[in-house]
Image (tube, rainbow, N blue to C red):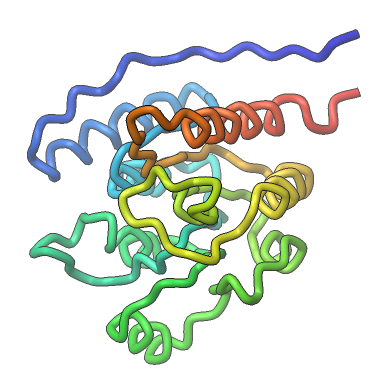
Length: 225
């Protein structure tokens, strides 16, 4: 018998142009769904939308021991970028202020970020050269929030991002990690961000949709008898 699950697609949030109000709208909406014990898969957009989810998770008491798992080409550990503390380049700096974090697939990093890592003796950053699914998953606590920037993938299969970086992970590596993650840990919610469609090039869009489908399938079907 075929396995099935159902899901609900919410309407797009109307965020406006002010980052503070936009993040509050995201946080409030995300928190409302978490309180209803829903698994939320948020789609971006700029990676900064994840900060709204982090705020909602910090206010939710159901999962006090939580790891933010970031899959990304970039470390996103700047404190301020383009005069903002809430940009796509600050996402994991804000996450680390509140949560245990694991970062994987990283292959683009600034001097400022390196200094921050060394000063604070930060561990659990897996660069592309050390991308090992078992090690990454084992580094996470029991409860996990997954934030997946599509530029973690190699541009040969995912060119449709704002900041593609060569030498990314491939399809098989990504899904080996995701399957193991959902099998071993309690993934409480997730986001997939940074798709920037290229007119006439449909394969990356289909790949992004496949990733979203797989996340839902792994969450609701993996391990079912």
